[in-house]
Image 1 (cartoon, rainbow, N blue to C red):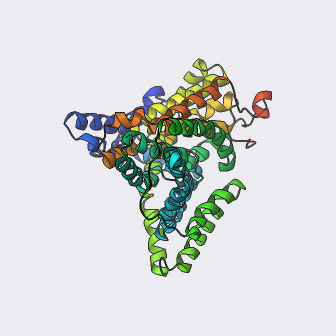
Image 2: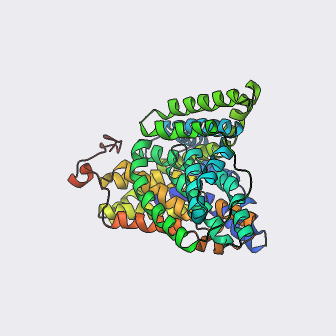
Image 3: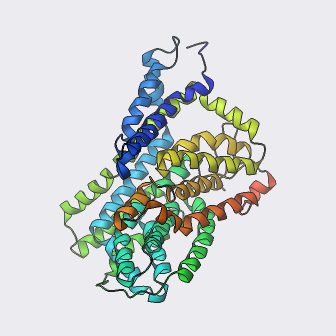
Length: 453
């Protein structure tokens, strides 16, 4: 196909259609009184079908329907996307097996049995942070620890909004840092860095915010008396510890997750938590929980491939190159873009998958380390996810407490502190690598990573 027409910003019409259908339908349903289910009435995948139809209509006479479909499919078959989907599925299988053998409840009870009552709110944050980091899911963490926090607050007459916000903050801490979180997987694959490197960069920022949050929770919280049975079998916590420890050694993520599934399965058999069919069903159930995000990733990548072929990506990169003059500007642009996408989509993983390919060339041009770009994407997507009233995490907290989403958001100190620490990191250039400071280029002429620093 010679002399093809390039559409510039109009090449984003499929992506804009996706956003318009999903966000527009959610706002309309909210106005009609659907409440917390407003953004569930038109699923994201249905909105992506609308984007696919627009993709098939764009391209002009020089791009026939077969060519357009080929372009869409080539976008979906991107190697990075395929690897990301495989990691999603294996992470789901591990989570399913670990949960089936009783790991979730054992981990929660272990933490609760170790927390002094005078530090109950700070302790709930710490327990939630560990669980979310180990399990890779903020929703699962809130579902497991949230009811306990509510019961403690109600029985002791404590601030209910503060109690559930400690769980929410800890859940977002782990969602941001976990090696098997879908946000980490999407950010590291999108920026081309190792999970271990991103964890170290991201971990320092998150740890500072977490310590400050725990100080606040300790000061404003009150002691409460824990009642109930919090017995646990430590052996059932081992699979999560295994994942955390070996992930930091730089173990290949596929080997790590397969080994984690094996460890969780062996413990499940040893403790009679399940038999062979139960083990297989737990793996299948965990993987099936990832099907939606896998399909969305494929369709989004297909839409992105069409936008790139129509010249939209090049147009955006040129515009950003013209407006972004410094390394600091590139980092602020990255934070802003993923924040806007997350506020619109109410899904931090999808926001990262949308933003990563758009900012990659700009951060490469300004020599921002891949791990730094991945950290910024993940941090700000999790910050926004923890403070938007239509986000799944906030809505789950609302369903557990009956409170207004805004009262919970106002008490979610961790997310606000995380944003402040991250902004300070960008503003003052904290944590920059030697290669960044000396201007050593870490990308080749095709913007592929040369050194994973």
